[in-house]
Length: 246
Ligand code: G3P
Image (cartoon, rainbow, N blue to C red; front, side, top):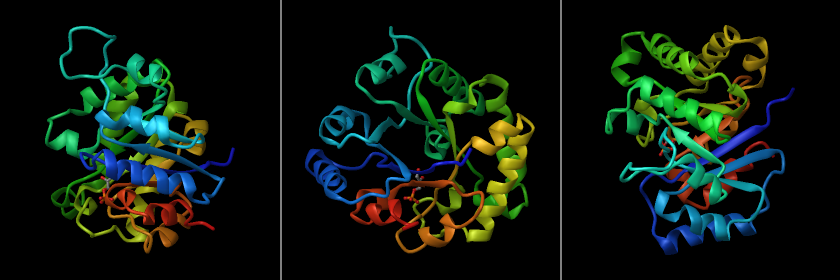
């Protein structure tokens, strides 16, 4: 089965009602490549606003979700609340949550298990720090994150993997196409240990300073199946990234 190219926009903790409406309007009037699956992840406060105004055919994702049913969990959002609001995806395990909010591999895996088992798509993020890359530990770090995921998740059909080297996030320092392809290939090889089907069908996105200039070359790599875009997803250039294969 061919893997459908996937472009996600992670707005992080950015935007206001008016700027987010502007992003939505830009997407609504753009001519978008029909061969691309598009998902945008605004801050939680704006999820309903985006879902209400955004054209159908583009899905909306939360940036995080909790791994328990509704109840006494102040500050959290549940999977059923997202589904009730027609929010069909969530990002999980972004490095900013792992490093700043101290989410462990196990916590991220538990959330991924709960979300997938309850019908949400998960953009699951992994990646190494600069220090780990320079020590030659990239594949070991990513494999350890994947092992923790595998220990808990069984439905891989709802998972899209985003490889985001931490040193390339928001720094303007994009991984070279070869660096990205090498890690994506290693992830695909690792997935073969789950099954050939999972390896062949799971989309592996690249994230880290993707923009309208570097996306074309990256998209040509055999194991790069799309992007998770941060800063550039807040700009009109996001449309060019979505359409990078045209
Ligand atoms: O999740 C997307 C991300 O972390 C990359 O951010 O701003 O470097 O595109 P950015």
